[in-house]
Structure formats: structure tokens, C-alpha cells
Image 1 (cartoon, rainbow, N blue to C red):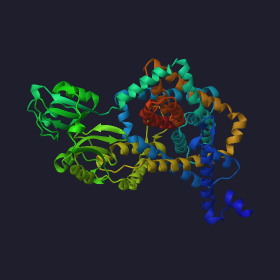
Image 2 (spheres, one colour):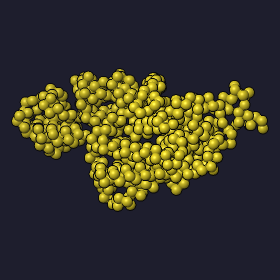
Image 3 (spheres, rainbow, N blue to C red):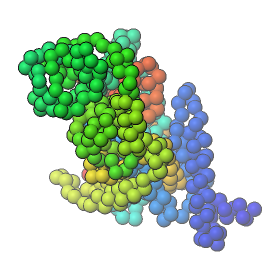
Image 4 (cartoon, rainbow, N blue to C red):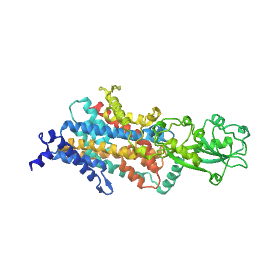
Length: 559
């Protein structure tokens, strides 16, 4: 009996000063928390946040771990989590600001700002400490990195102090943060008088247009002014991204095209380009026609090849000279599910899938050139991960001053690694850094990190959780609901009335602005289109960044 008592409650004489006890408690908290998170009530579950509540339960009954070990595990888990999130969103972070993404990100910023203003207003109205309100705000928008950033910022300005009410506020507000976002989505449908059938059709049409990143078009050359010009000259003349895959001259069989190929009137060419660029090429070259290239080019095959050779990472397509060395033409490149035009200045990344066209033997030769080995991609690249973490910690530890803020600002262990991971994910291949990790490896890293972090936060908050709720903390649930619902409701009306967004895109943006995966899951179930997922993915990186920054600034300014 004493053995079990020492094992659960700890003993300095047990297995090297209680280290085994700490590891055991962490493992049990995470295991029971994941099981708790899988329990669904009305189709809604806590997910990984169940670990937080399991930690609170253990802490409430006095089952805890060494405070120094808990602090280390919590902070290291947070770093792993935000860094893996940054690597995932990095490649698409800056692309999300292009074209229609600007409008969606503007709405996301409005959601974040309204949430911050609501938090500040409740801080003055209720008199609650800003630490409590920031915890409630982070729980209300289900933003765990924001919770970590707030705790880190408080530790920076009050060394040795621990604001347990940040975690308590988060835990109290979190459940209704999930439910409130879903209820707001339903409420918007009635307030805005949404015709779901019309919105579904419009979202489907919009998705088709958006997903058509590249299109195959056959054009007959009819413009005398380009007769006798080479493909390279036409590229310089138009300054557009397009690839001429094949050419069929009168009374001849189709053949591959390179930069020196000369076009003549009457030639039929197959181009791969974005819809806008394809239309521009058609206007210059001739007219669009229908043609069955498959039957005419039976000796040619089209195949997608996976880039798995590290030495190709970051190289431009023009450097490889694939047409002259392998006798094939690269028509497009698929990266993260998006088809890109194979322009000469496009930099390759490990994990890209290139579409090549050519004779069977030439395609086989190209396969050897690119690698096309899934086994190579499964091997983790740990050096960029740990170098990136080191750089992130250094960046997060640097102090800088902002006007009107008395304390120097630090990005902290949440903001620093997040920014470095985004930059490495986006620009790493440009400097020949292999940043590719499989989705499963990234997910494992992220889940281990968030599990350690939430377990540490829950154990730290467990002792004061129930007394806080009994002594008026139940009102925090109401405050969290206001922070959840008001910004989403107002932003939803703005997005519909001012930005004219499709309903299904709108609810995806609102889910992404709240960094709320359960809300996205609910939104996706309302339609057969990908509009909610596209909206969520477009705004999630920027919203995550501002959520983390806002949590820190509120602590630094008002604490």
C-alpha cells in the first residue's frame, strides 16, 4: 500500500528522487485525458483538451509532479507544438495574402480585434485581473498557443511567479468556446436568411474556379505575327507562366516542345497554364480548339513523379534542363494538393510531385533523376527541426520595445519558434534546407507537444480549480461565451453584408479565425463542398499568429 501511495503522490526516495513518479503521472494524465476527449456529448467532444481536464482532476486530488520538471515539460511541449504548426502552415502563410485571401484575412483580423476589445471591456467592467481574462479569452477561442504565450509573458515580467488563474480561466471557458462557435454558425444562418441550396451551388462553382490552378488548353496557331518565333521568344513577349507540352504540325504526329521549338501558323499546341494565362495565350496565338491528344500520342505517357532526392531541394526547374537531359517535358507541379505551372523560375521542394510527359523510356530516366522513392521521404529530417527550435528560442528571448508599453516585449517560447518555423517552412528550400516532414510525422510531433503542455497546465491549475468555480468562477463561463459569440456574430454580419462572402466560405473563415477545429468539422458537415476548409486554411496561419501576439500584449500592457 505504501508503494502505491509513494508511486502516485511521490517520494524523494522513489526511483531517483521521484522522476519515475513524475513520468508516471504525466503518462496517466495524458492517457486518461485522451480517453476523456473522445467522449461525445450531442456530437461534440473535447478532443485533445481532455488532457487539460484530466490534469486538473489529478491536481485537485493532490497527485502532482516536481514543479521544475513540470515547468520544463510544459515549455518544451509548447515549443514542439507551435513549431510543428508553423512548419505546416509556413508554405501557405504568405500565399494566403494573395487575391481573394486578402479579404478573408481582413475579416479574420476583425474577429481577433473584436475578441481583444471584448476582453478588455470585461476586464474593466468586472474588475477581474487581466491574467484571468486572457485565460478566459484563450479558452473562448480554443487557442492553446495563446494560453502558453500568456503564461510565458507573465513569467517574463514576474520571474518566479505563476498565474494559475490563466489556466483556470482557459479551462472554464473552453467547453462553451467550442459550443458557442457552433451555435453562432447556426444563428448566422437564420439572421442572414441563408438559402442553403443557393449557397451550396455558388460555393461549388467558386471552388471549381479556385481549384483550377492549372488547365490544359489546345490552341491552333493563327497569328501571323508570331509565325516563325520560338517558344522562348513568345515567353519573353508575353511574360506569362505557361508550358507548351506538345505540338502537332499539319500532317504530322505530336512531338514534345522545348524553348527552341519554332511555331508556325496551322500548328496545334497543348498548353498548361492558369485559366487567366491560358486565355491570354489564346488571344495572342490563335483560337481554342478541341483535340484528342491521347489517341494521337499513344507513344507518349504522362506520369507524376515524386521528388525525393535532397540535392534537388531548392533548385530552379531551369537549372535541371530536364528536356535536354531526359527527353521529357514537365507540365505542372503538385505541391500540398495544389497544381502549379512548371515555370522555369519555380523552386522545387522535397515532396513535390512533378507531371512529366514523354516516351516511356525517357519518363523512366526522369524517375531516376528525381528519385521517386517514398522510402526516402519517410526518413525524418531532424537537423532542420532542432536548428529551427534553437533559432526560435533565441528569437523569442530577444527583447524589443513598443510605443506605449512599459515593459520590453518578447515573442516568447510560443511566438519565437512559431515565426521561425513559418519562415523556414516557406524559405528553407530556397537555401537548400530540407524541411519536408510527412504529415504523420508532423502530426505526431504536434500531438506529443500539446499533450505534454496541457498535462502540465492542468496539473498546475488543479489545486485551485474547484474553489475558484465555487467562489464565483462560474460567471467566467458567461464572460467566455460573450468573447466567443459577440466577435463571431458581428464579423459574420460584416463578412456577409460588406464583403459579400458565400455563407460556407464565411463560416470556414470564422472557424479559422477562432482557431477552432470542432467548429470547422461542424461547418464541413453542412455542405458537400470544400468551401469551409478553404476559408479555414486561408486565415488560420495569420489568425494563429495574431492570437498568440494578442495574448502576450494584453499581459504586458495590463498586468
